[in-house]
Image (cartoon, rainbow, N blue to C red):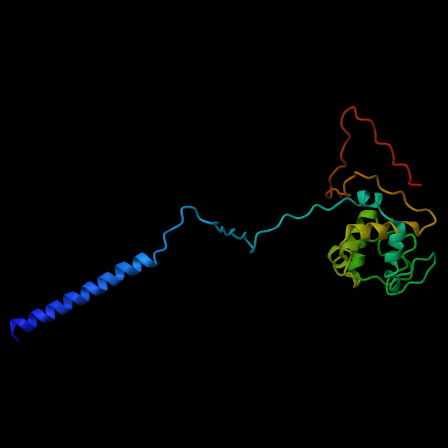
Length: 215
């Protein structure tokens, strides 16, 4: 191979390299994407807590005393019509799928004569020591199976505060002597721990007066 052919090959190789290099420069200039001075937004992922998922703060339950202060008995009577498939509300009324609910407020739990209660309800009753207070009724009607483990009641519950208060206000009227309403502004009933002594009033504080019965 003479020197002329070698020069031609070198010239072709160099020309090819030049073309490729030139195309690369032009492509970079045309399709360059410089980073913005300020990012549009940043996505920050919250680390899950143990057990999976970030726990949302639980909504504080409203005291039943405050709810009953605004309750509507007529609205509660309308809602109670749905309950009459399983419960009667008359004095001396029959037991159905559930017990008669006449005078149910402050009645001992699982002690209504003639009704066969579930084992879960009997356990909750503690031999009649537990009563259907306004607070217990509120929790039970919210979610029966969650509040009384093992209850046979198939009702899903009333999640709305207003509906529960209206029904409980109506149940209160099913009595010859309706029980006094709790005082608004009081917190939900709290049970002391076993063996704990009752709280003593502050020094110099006057003893609390009993609440006047609702008219």
